Image (cartoon, rainbow, N blue to C red; front, side):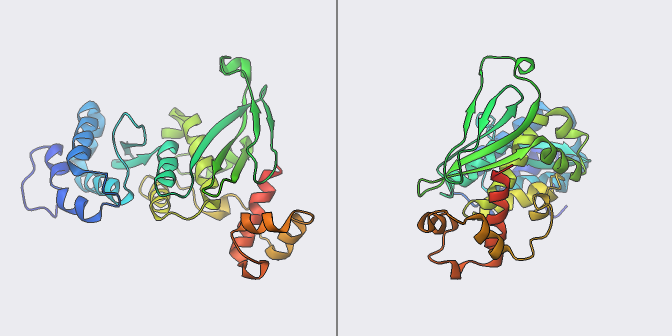
Amino acid sequence: MSNQVAVRNVNDIVLQQERVFNDVCADNKILFAKESQFAMQLLQANEFLNKIAWANQSSLQNAIINVASVGISLNPATKHAYLVPRKGVVCLDISYMGLIHLAQSAGSITWAQCKLVRASDTYSNRGLDKSPDHSYNAFATDDKRGAIVGGYCTVKLPDGDFLTHEMNLEAIKKIQSLSSAGQKGPWKDHWDEMARKTIVKQSSKYWPRVDRLDNAIHMLNTDADEGLDAIKDVTPQAIDNPIDELMKLIEGKPVDKVLKWLKVESFDQLSTEAATRAVIAIRNSKQ
C-alpha cells in the first residue's frame, strides 16, 4: 500500500484517503467527513463487502476516491451511489437516479424521469420536443400490467424543450448481453434498476455534455465492469452520409425549431458527429 501508516481495519483505509479525496473532489458539497462515515456504515453492514475490502485494499481506496472525483454521495437516504463487491474488488456503483442527479446538479437538464413500459400500458410518442403519453394503472400488480416491453427516459432541457429516448426490450437485452455481468450480479438481482440505468446512460448521449456525468458513466463501464460502451450500443449500422440522412428525416419540420433542437444557428455549423447523434435520436423516437 502507498500509505505508510499501518492499518488495523477497513475503517483505517477509508480515513487515510482524506487528503486525496479533498484534492480531487468535484463538488464542494461532497464532504469527506460525511462520506467517510457513510462508507464505513456500508462496510460494517455488509460482511462480504468488508471481507473483499480487506483482501483488496487498493480497490477500496479507488472506490472512495471515485466518490470524490465523480462528486456523488454515498448517503443511503438519496439512493444515488453505493459501495459494492464485484469480481473480488470494491466498486463504486451509481444508480440511474444518481446519474440523473449529476446531470441536474450540473444544469444539463432540469428534471428527468425514467420508466419501464408494460404490455397493458398505453404509450404514445408525441414527437421530438414533447413528453410522451404513458398511461397505466399505478396500483395494479406487475402481473396485471403484463411483461416489460421496453422503457423510456424523458428529460426537460434548460430551454424548456423535452427530449425522450426509448428502448424496446430487445435493445435493452442486447446491451445486457454486451456486459460481462449480463447474466449475474446486478442484472440478475436488480434487472429493473439495471434496465433503467441502461436507458438513462443511452439517453444521456443526447443531453448537453457534463464532465462529471461522463466520468461517472466511464467509471461504471470500466471499474464497475458494466461494460456498456458508447455509440456502438445504439447504432445498428454505420450511417454513410449522416447530414444528408438528417435532412431527409427533418423534411417539412419548422427550421427554427430544428436548429434550436440541434443547438446550432445554421445547418452549416452541424458536425458529422452531431448529425449522426441526431439521426440516431430520431430513429429511436420512431421505434
